[in-house]
Image 1 (tube, helix red, strand yellow):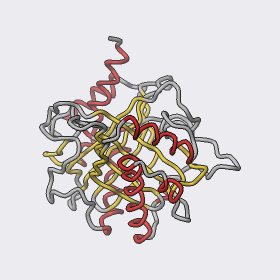
Image 2: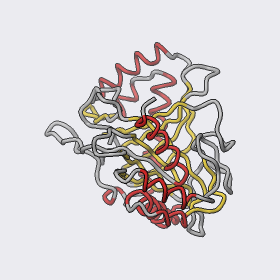
Image 3: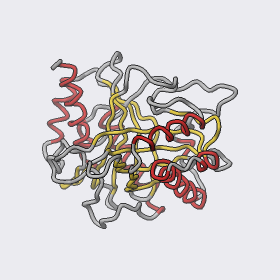
Image 4: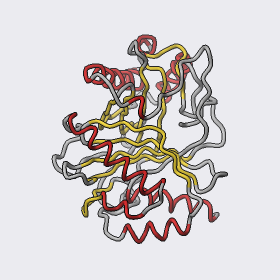
Length: 314
């Protein structure tokens, strides 16, 4: 096994211990015939709560109808014809989605899309799910991110897919909630700006500034759902100090943030070096009213060498 492969495993496990992961690349070029690419993080912060709730319902409805029922009519109803796709396994466009679903449901007729948590901010919706393709299997941890246009149509899609392992070192599954209150629903909306500020400060301080003092944002318990990482924040400062010395060329790019209530999702790209394709990661943080991060979920996917679209995973 190559040293690079071992290093990537180290990166994913260690970064997950405190927070996030990420994958980068270039931004997709907009064309005259396609909707513009995703707005910046700042642009997506403001939104109408009623529209955001509607978009959440639509995103879940579309996923379940397509993957569980094979209902292609929802694609015509809710997805733009010039839909921008960032999943490397699918081309752009609504017709490509319909063709994909025809093949998928024929291969996996009993597919169940178990939705675990849903967040919305501005024109973005994040859906964290446990799709199970075949009965009796563990399925995958999937984070879908949708961008809605002003007419309420889905214009763009990103996702990160990771297989669910048989066991975890922390005793937690990849989806449940351990901290109190034990709910997968986001907290009250008044917490959104506060939670977003805490989570992004932690992320940027640790992974962009490479400052191990960022662990001050974590509670001692820090419940972990990354399957390779134990619970707790004890010892992380020393671990990260050693890690950044070992990998001085680590590059982490934060691509988009979606916050609602006490939950914050960070979609990012990290690489061991400028030449590394790296990994696409979505980290989800739960922030307590005391300003500390209580809990963490994530999905991690290697960026492939080739894709069926030209948009990158970011």
